[in-house]
Image (cartoon, rainbow, N blue to C red; front, side, top):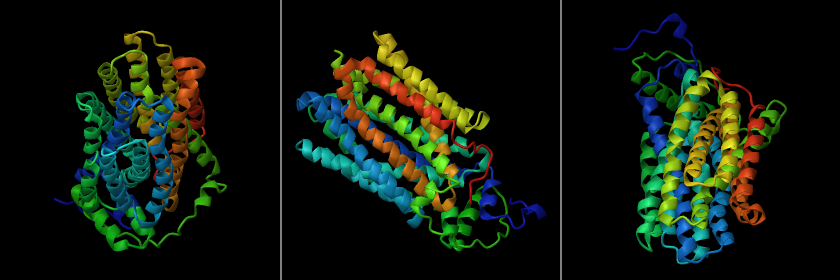
Length: 444
């Protein structure tokens, strides 16, 4: 049974109508539908770390060659994030989301057919184009539908699907990759799944109401809002006409009102990307180089990966009680301490304990960062702003895997993870310069 609108319901904007809703089945479908895409993204990124460890033995590859396999995908991700954000503000969040799934799914499957290093690197670049565009676009879409009072928590839960995907990658790495000489190829063939899922995304997930209004597509925007209201049993009300908004320019990210938050956001993204990808892309290979067997190092990585799940759960709770800024800074500080401890670990127990702490704090920080990023920009710039911050962060993810062999030569694993700890600490300082958006509606 639907409820009757009250006088206070009249003339609410469509965004206000979405904000008044409880979390319902439509929100759940959007969260899970986007989250599955997010998990498949994580699975693809995670798989390459296990493929690298296997190819180091099968193809007798040098650390420099391995670092290029790890980094080339992030070159594509940097370009993809920037272009994906721009396109999301022009042709829609859902369309870009579906296209990116198709691109990186097909390219990952094709990478399983690689006959040499050059072919693998070329296909990993294409994979990166799709991966880089997907994440900021998906988080923007979910953020624009989530009610204000729980928006941060919903986006952290979306980010938690990353842990699901990384666990899948660890399981595939543990079971499939060591099973035969072609195990790494079969692992990459599994990466074709996102290509099939793209068709579900395009058909079943809604387009952003804010985007539709900004483009003057009011009829479609109204239909989308009514679907969410119907799922909550709330009668629709009349909304004032929404005039199409301007097409924002990239340079507006550095205008007087946005310059400070853009700089702080980019610095946080850079530090998190540098340390996360530098550490987690290399951990399996570093463990093998320390004398652990391929299977045992993959087993350690699987245990460490499982610690991501409680990290996300803690961040999802704290982001609405402590706030975005405090949660992000605290988890980044915890990541810094854990990274240093991992570099000093000398026993199996210490490696697992420090690795689990690093997973817990680092992935909780990722959840908070993805929650705050779309919130600090208006609708016309939201995709561009989120994509540009992610693209700048991807520069760090390119540099980090390449820097590991050099840092290892200079001072071993201890120096590598000390540098990662410093990068986390600098990101924590940058987080304190971000605006606090807990309980506030998104900027129109």
